[in-house]
Image (cartoon, rainbow, N blue to C red; front, side, top):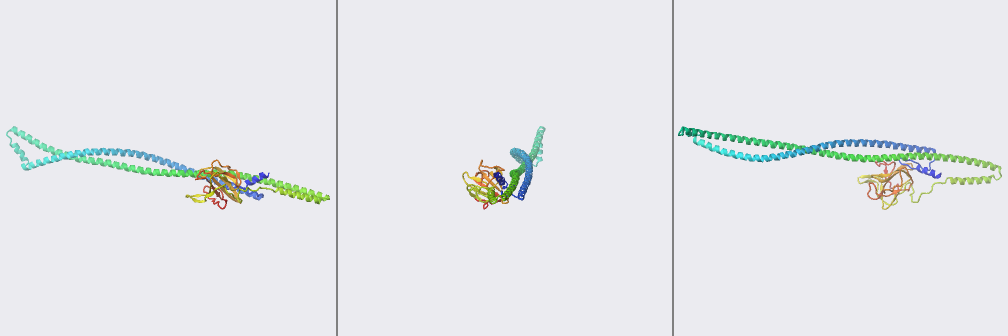
Length: 464
């Protein structure tokens, strides 16, 4: 019976945020009512925190949904831009080929222009000779002399034909000259227009391609930002889910603490009733003995013997708790590691807040519960690695201790287990976000939260 009472008293003496209990010396009804009131208040606080975390998770989920929707929109735009870029690059290739073909045609045309220019120069020389001849002979007078100098009618006809042929030849030369000049001017104009048009189209296409690539760069940048935001939201959700699970475990432990407190109060009430019953029986017995003593001559001696016996019996009833192990430090806390040195303290480290102290050592180093408490969580965390959370209630103050980076497979306690100060709970390791074997130990004055705003420096409070 004493063992059962001691266990209930120990359990009801443990708490942190989720588990509040009280010391074994508490026996009064008023104090018991206060214990239950505070336990129920803690449970209500946990439920409020659960509601808050759930709300944050819903917000994060909605935010993640919005990010995914925006990512789909950006992905659609990227596909459109990539399609346009591919199409534009094909057109650029086509225009470049057309320009190359046109330049080949230009070379041929330039050769033709040179030939036409040479013909024009020859005709110009011929026309100049003809003009000089006209100046020397008087122009048409020459043709009259030719006609009048005929010897016969037949000769006259021949001369008229010859003169007509010469005149016609001159006119043909003039027409060809004009035609070649027109062809040259037209070819040059067409060439200039065609090249200008192709170069304009090529410039437009290259400008469009540059614009599309600029848009693609912006969309890629936006997509990268969205991926980063998605990663951050996922990390935030993982943290919230971890906190949500921790609150669930705290609530379960709290309900267990409330149940145990009720059992403790019932046991104390039963003991009080039994003690009252025994007291009344002893009083009745003492009264009967006193009455009998008055009738007997030896009543004084008999009454003294009975009082001595009763005192001895009462002393045996008050016997209780055994001494603590000599390996456990005196005071509220004991050293959490069996060996090692403090390699890092609480504070800023590598740009982030280091919420505890690190104790480093080699070999199979045991890890102990720093104080009496109840295990809140015992699991594998992505950051803490193999970790155990224990809640305590010491001198009216709530505390939470964290034991992180334990060796795989070494955790010896589970959520809801009652532990005593100095009890072995695991082995030092190098799991999670860790660089070398050590124990990462945190002490929180109040409940543990994701922001670790309740973390305090354990040095000076916990013996190291």
